[in-house]
Image 1 (tube, rainbow, N blue to C red):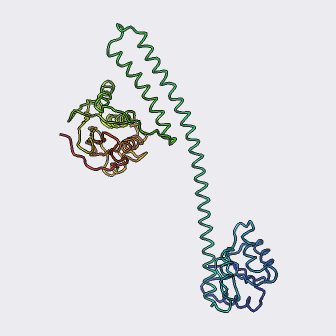
Image 2 (cartoon, rainbow, N blue to C red):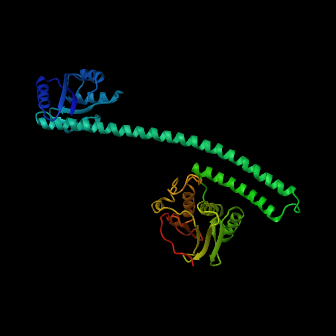
Image 3 (tube, rainbow, N blue to C red):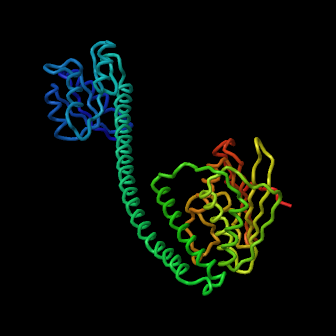
Length: 396
């Protein structure tokens, strides 16, 4: 390693001794320059970059301590490492030197050539490490600022996009409502009237989902709005809507009679839509989607279990641990199957906000089962985790 050293000492004998100690080093090259005053040293440091300054405490005019302070008070691009030389072992001088910015100090006539070389190398290493840490800190601050600016742009784009998306939905809903009012009941069959109503509800629901998406991306997600609800009624309404649109067979099995609890209706609606939507999307037309509801014991008033099973493409074993991570999709999902990879992450988050768990079982090529367990009240511990492929007991 080659190091550039500036020796600041007004004693010719001491300068000669230091030169000899450094130049006789077999392990590295030392380029030593010498000046006799602090003022000369400051001019030299400004003129050419140096690795380390070895400065005597006792100097004519400004002493060594003053030189160190002056170095750190000036706006230099890179202040070299500093080692202080003293003629005595004064602890006060050592403390003052370190406070002023020196990396080490040596007492004259007591150190060896090896000790001198080791001290200079160590001082240079510490300064270089400090510079690297500072450079990383600055880089991290710049990256953080760039991320904040990118998030601001993203939020603005999302706001514009959601606004543009809601416009056509409102037109669809208004036109469907207008048709329902203008066409006499004798003109519309019950099936046609029902489908118009489905269009209106779906448009309103899509508007709510767009609002929720904007809230989540901004980090403004609202707290749970718990209210008494019947999960059986919600499941029934979703299956009824899917039966009219999807080309699948839907089956509902129930074990128990009470599937009520204190939950966030819209939040669980999003969870159910995601699970049922995935079951339809990842399985072929004509296959069966099975939904199971069951009462489970627990403290203080028990839980409700919901299972959604399909006969679709399944999830590869290696992908199962990551199925609830954002932007992760199974490697067997082809490009013609639309999706962003955020639905299951959002579903897991909502279930855990309720103090529940969500689990997955799957065999590639044979289908997938998602199991959700929800405590009936908010007395259960919020934040329980269930994202891994932990087996769940089948319902009988």
